[in-house]
Length: 170
Image (cartoon, rainbow, N blue to C red; front, side, top):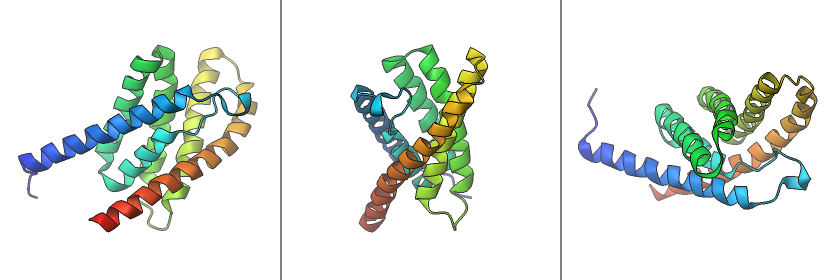
């Protein structure tokens, strides 16, 4: 196996930096938008369209690093420790499922993204239930499953569209 050249490493690093910056900007723009229908915790997850793109177009370790850096940096810039904790739980579970399912050739990226959206909500609500000792949040999870599917479908369509156009450019 041939090791990557310095140029390849530099290119991958620059590309990853652009993707991370895009994720941070999309996350910030989304934080400026009002809560959907006045319901807390529901947002589109625009930066996740970049993550699903990374899962499919880059290697999985790079996608994981992007997710971790996005959570840490956006938490430090726009949130706090609690934001990081909840986002890391949701991001890790989401990225885990998307990493596994993206390798199943028969699954469309939109389905993988929908699963990622649902698992992100599952991770966050699970942490909230554990920290707040509030098992009643399980009822809220029922709503968030449908919201995760809808938002995941939308971000998956965005990512698929970008991937299709980038493949045609190559």
